[in-house]
Length: 193
Image (cartoon, rainbow, N blue to C red; front, side, top):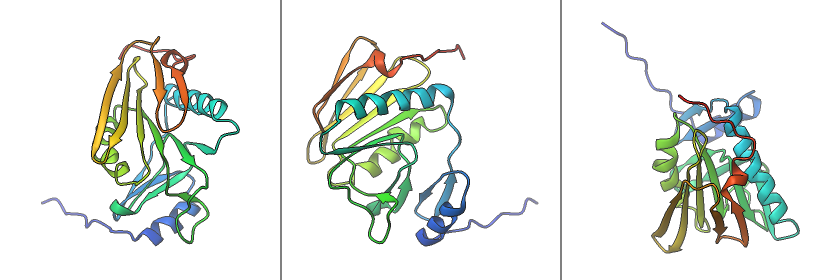
């Protein structure tokens, strides 16, 4: 007979204390602490490329751009997570009592990995949609040229577009900015699986 291990439920406060002392990042999902695995070189480069493109395009404008290590809290679903790239309008809103956790992104991008792509497209996107000023979600595949772009058009309505052409220019609606898909994939080397 196999012994059942009892599931440990953590409070948000316990998670935040553990996260401060941890050497690696973890996501908090309503009581569960989920370790975040390290990214691949392609994942890191794509995230970095998008961060640099947005940082340059939005220079001097009323936005803050964050890359990988900025924690986001989503109170409606009790989720703490670290999006790959976030754009947050100024003034920056922080979780009450915290100096390290934002709550008001208007744009989030995730680079898809085989282990997280279903979560990023479903439960995580549903969680992001509970953020009142969240307007745009970009999913970028790291194994081939493929981008999924979700734009909020009205309450409870999202427009979905997907692109496989590196020459397509993405126009963001949460802020004035355009990015050519080929620039997201600069220096990326695809390998056959």
